[in-house]
Image (cartoon, rainbow, N blue to C red; front, top):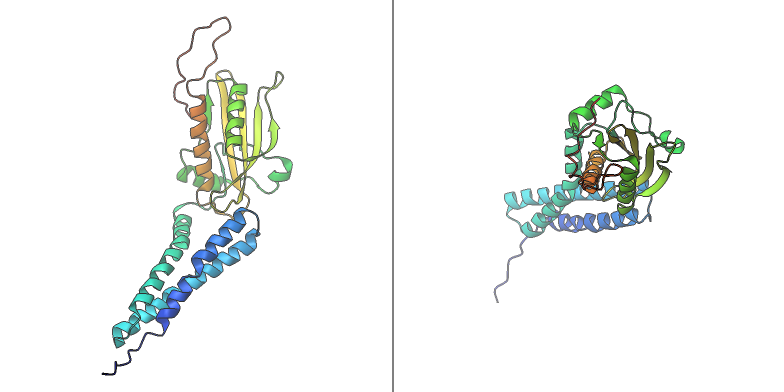
Length: 272
């Protein structure tokens, strides 16, 4: 029998794959535990940082293995490639986060009315000082569509639609001021959650009566972090899209007139 020559393997190749297999399950478990409040936010981010560090080490080891394979002709291409690719998948997440942090302004408190934002309750307002003029300018540049809405519908009708949407989203309702005979204005405070990590976000919706219907403003402010990665603007945008749909085609006939009114015109931002 002819002896088979011993073939060397790049030493870092198997370690690249072994390490690259760790971050994904680690991140999945951490995210699930954080969503269901089994781990606090600070330890969660520590786990995320560890997972990303492991992925970075796996990528470096995969690169070193590829270099050794190219120069010395040793084995280990498969494990090195697999480890590097898995590491790249994991590191794509912080890459996307960094890209959003560069592309979007550093804001965590977004309002449709930057000159007079809806006020949170006293216990919440202390955690959210009003954005300054520079922040308001940055918001206007980044999110020009985040503006107040005007609906030619009575405040009670708008309030009911708002409460339905808040409840359907699973937001935790806080302070509520419903419209009544003495005061047609209304407001709703609630706590929303971010999509993936379920981080708390304070939301305030204000409904003001005017001669033509109702003016609606919304404010969304993150409790954690100074950069929301566009989350608050997306929340306001999505909420108003659904509120538009809920109120479109709804109108109250004038007293003594039972004729069905035509659908409402498209809603427009409040002019100032």
